[in-house]
Image: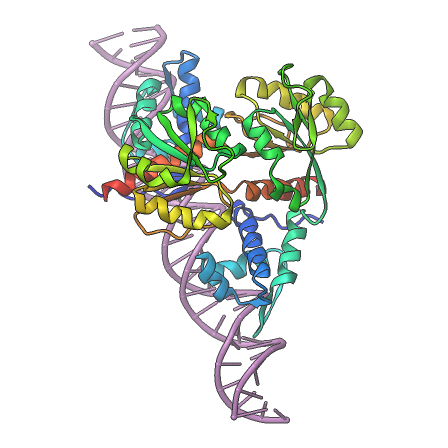
Length: 211
Length: 211
DNA sequence: ACATTTTTGTTAATATTATGTCAAAAAGAA
DNA sequence: TTCTTTTTGACATAATATTAACAAAAATGT
């Protein structure tokens, strides 16, 4: 069953294809050629065809790609054709922002619980769910068979909390803490290092001003 | 003055070097070799040396790199050796999360103002600053000579708001809206597409489960 | 029905990125 | 001081990724 392994660069682009296809569907467009899509996405047509052909021949000569079909195929590839239960650890502004993000729900990511260690906010509602004590982490994960967690706490506590998460059965971690987590091979980490993103912006603004 | 152009891959890694150097400084370590750093960062020593040599010879044979010195040099390269005034457009949870992020201030990013179109929250405080009406965008940017803006509003309004920002003098945009912005060449966009990040996590969790 | 056009999937060519190698420089040890 | 070890910066090599080219398939037009 071992899929030929797909390069990081392709994986990076996949969700962007998905987003464009979604937009095209919303516009009621039915089919698109790689060359037309390449103009919109500012890629080469060749790259689009090669990227998609990593997963199968979704197009047809003389016709192009059926948007609805390709959209659904990419959803399958991205594993978003079914629901994912997730929890959020850390109910600060960022944790709450994620919890309230309706777009995630639209794509099948369901926030089942949100946790914080601060007793003064435990019990508060975030949207429709209640902030729970960290003591409940393990039981909630196990009872609901949750596999995905967003980590929105400072880097200090993050390392130990992530261990707890993994012990409780989490296999995918969306990490917003400013630290690279060291985890077993079968655990997946997706880092969102916002301050690094901001530094890249700063770098490129510096470049832009020099020219 | 034209710097030899630096590949995106290098720029991507630069802030991560900076973060590791910061951590090393906090640990009171004075010097490090590319090979020791490569172990910590899980890169090859060769890549580290080549990355850094894009910007200058910061190391010394038989000694390695002086951490404080390299840290300061990278700060200069990243253009974070001086303060950056910024504004935030959109005072939802995400905008508020960014406004409250003390780490940004530590690196010299100063949030000067936050804007929202919702009259019911205009005037509310976010940390030490007050949410202002969108009408004030242009005057605040011009009066304070602000060059950087974080865009934390839905994709629909984002496109027009970004035009306004650019007209008012913004040259760097930290974009959290789910849309690729079409801007003049001299304007810099750094996208943070959270839902794409989440889809990549989902993809890789799917892969991990197959093995 | 036939010719023309479009457009894919695939293979080949090019370009970019990462890794390995090594002489030369400096540090540290004897 | 002199010898040995460490370690860089530069360059050569290998691996990846992107772009180009094109035959074959299907659609469209006449």
